[in-house]
Amino acid sequence: MANLYIGLVHYPIMNKHKEVITTAITNYDIHDIARASITYDVSKYFVIHNIPAQRELVRTIMEHWKSGFGSTYNPDRKDAFTGVELVNSIAVVVRMIEDLEGMKPIVATTDARTYDNTISYARMREHLENEGRPVLVLFGTGYGMTKETMESFDYILEPIYGHGEYNHLSVRSAVSIILDRLRGEAWWNK
Image 1 (cartoon, rainbow, N blue to C red):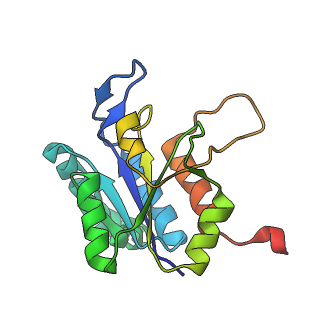
Image 2 (cartoon, rainbow, N blue to C red):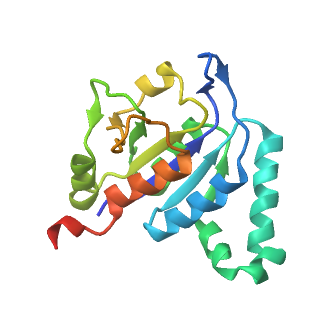
Image 3 (cartoon, one colour):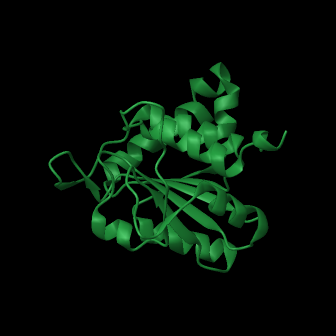
């Protein structure tokens, strides 16, 4: 089975006016995604932020749960942070995975639209289960990553469609749904 890595990208991100911005760290994104990552056996969860003060905020939050009061108040949370890594760019993440794995990962991202290189969850799951090349799935914050950034990736995972017309999930929700589709129990085979 191929190793799965994920990254939460805060730059370069689009805002609702299609301007390039850096989004702020959200406390819930850090620990909710960390908990989902350990549940679905993600090799590493990268929090990708280009501003040092924001990375320091993440360190402070993580230390609270790893060794501060939070570590005794909720010990399970401490375990969730064992696979979280703070980095300043997507390029650093790709290099780190290449160093760990001895090969460049397949890089995929998510979007609410389809593209020429859109891949189904079934196909990506099949790759993860049957091939050895690691996969990095990147999740954008704000209104998503810039078009130029997304064009540099190998694949875009197909959109998540609900039953209704509205289609703008929180990143925490999207990560959990996608991890379940890629690594969850094959309930449809039961």
